[in-house]
Amino acid sequence: MKVVGKINKYVKRPAIKQTDLYQYVEKHRHLLERVNCPIKIKCEQDLFDYEIVVQSLCTKQIIDDAFDMFRTEDDMYQYLDYNERRRLFSQDLKPQIATRPHCLDVDGNDIYLACYEPLINNWYTLDYQMVELKQHREHIDEAHVTKDTPFALYGKGVYRTKFSSLMLVFEDELGLVFYSKDFGTLYFYKKDTFQMILSITIKPKDYEEDIPLDILRLLTKCFLEQRDKDALMVMHKEGFIDDKIYKKLMKIVK
Image: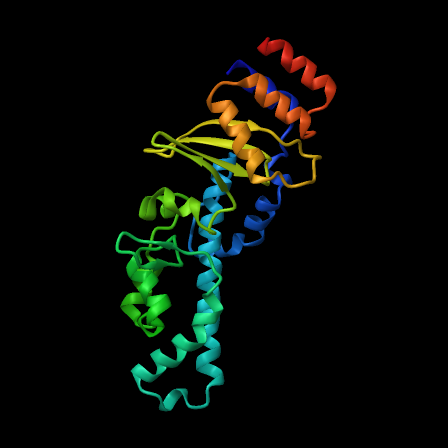
């Protein structure tokens, strides 16, 4: 795939700090710092990993705020027993997290805080009063949160949910291919290890329209089958590369 290096040379992807995704992570840096999560973004994959942690911590903040409001604004709170508090808060919380990103653990339970183990997730989403216990609060505060935690706990499935802005465009027994709208790039991963083996920028940073899924899949198929000429023809037809670049690249594959 000699042409891939040349495509990445001529089709410029935006710098990491120029993307909306980077701005999203930076906007919520305080949440990462609050849980002592080391922050070092060296490459695009780092950014994808931090996105999942930030999404999780945003949901945690929603739940924390919801319980504070429940406790301070419900005049009957101090008169409710444990089970009543649990039942009423669950009713309040359910619509607030209904559209938040979540994945499943090995037991099929919903995980809304992918940067924490299932036990902590259950405390937050099923019985928040457990979070208030001193020993549980210490357990949460001592949890080691890094950009790698969601993958370590829940595997590559987290990237196939709304936790991630990556779009899955291809999958077989050997690999996965995702597309990032922020970078206009296809990312090729080994399926067993989720190791990124290749990235191909197909949309220049000044191209504003979204790429239809069928075009993404067509280009992915061309690259996987090493039909570089067909891939270039598609990119030219869709306006991702101009005539000058198209002619230069076609000379390589002829």
